[in-house]
Image 1 (cartoon, one colour):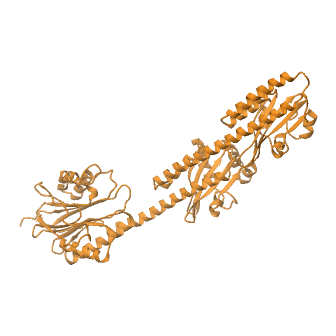
Image 2 (cartoon, rainbow, N blue to C red; image 1 turned 90 degrees about the vertical axis):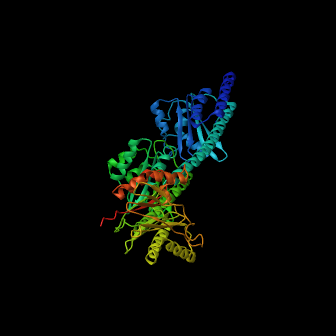
Image 3 (cartoon, rainbow, N blue to C red; image 1 turned 135 degrees about the vertical axis):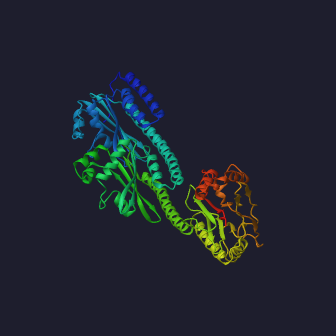
Length: 596
């Protein structure tokens, strides 16, 4: 009903309308929902002489009603009003449902309309309930309570409507701004998470970082569980409070997820479908194993939860969970889609890591199967070999070997198949086997390289291969080498003189048709020849000539009586530990001939 003001109240009404106009201007400038709430329950109430005011809003996710703020009542009553149960009729709830304002004049009318609302009896009053209407529906309600049976003029009621419309517009604007900000935050989060997921093949450490990134902007709790040996293993859990992280891990150990539960991580893993749950106390009671479990669950203040599967190539690897608790946020379908986007990226990272590990393991086994476990024993020579993988991977294309012949000579070679992984390891195994086979036919270095060129020309290859072959003959005191595009060998004479052999006399294998050339040089008692791959001497900040010079300076290390120790010391002194490349080196030293 509408009450006409008594005569003589025009001045008071004009003052109220002026103050109310100022309030609407404040609403236009408000930058957040808390500010809107404060303006409504404090400033607008004071402007119209209302002694009690409240603002009730419809939360976007879940469309639940919540009392955003209340003023003019004792603290205990305010707390009770903030916890209003909207399952029963209330003034704000009815206004939001109908979209029409409600005016109740007098205590009797108020109690008759809402007899079950706690603490609504405030004596003789006028209750004005205003809907916050927008094109999509009603998003909230303002409730103003005036003492006594004060008259409300048509002008005041119209201005109340203006107040409600301005408040609704402010909320719509803020929600649009918040949606845009959340969308931007999601894009930034996905960019950071994607960078983390692509930065390393250590998916456990990476997913831990991703879980931490989600807190607190998108979740109060963030966790990742992976399937291992038929069980869900808690890989990562994050919360702002480290003590709560420990609590979450303890709870997972004391109260593991039920594999047969109709909802939760196991159910998501089995079905491959995401879950969105708005948590109620009834759910907590049903899921609790014992009273202690229920007590802890209630203390966590769980409100909403998202669980999404980590799926790659049709296989569910585990689940990712986000939980809203003390922040009071409530998840929606849009949040589920966002979490699924992140989960898809995380699952791909996990799958790539597992594939890399499997491929690396296969290539490593292949490489270890074809590289010699130890240097061979020869009658007239000491032989030492060194192989060290790069820091990034244990699989490359470097290969080497030394083959003692029946007449006392030793054939040796060091090669490099360009590339990494299984393809390089397989090509390396084929090349090493072919070299050994051709040495058995004719060990002269030129003959070995010519036959390899013919083989690769005939059968073709996608791999670029460099190779240096040598033959040490103690009877003639001679060393013969042939080089197909490989770094040149170096010789350390017994006298300490260092000799840099010429660079390669031809391109890598199968690049040209011309016959290979050999170089012969003396090789006497105590002389050492060192053959190696480019990983030993290359550095980013210098030329190959600089690397060769550095190697010659350190060559004295192979005069150590223990050739293995000397070779190891040389490699440690020469190689660049920051360079991501394999190193293979082979040293052959002619022993002193016993006096007759």
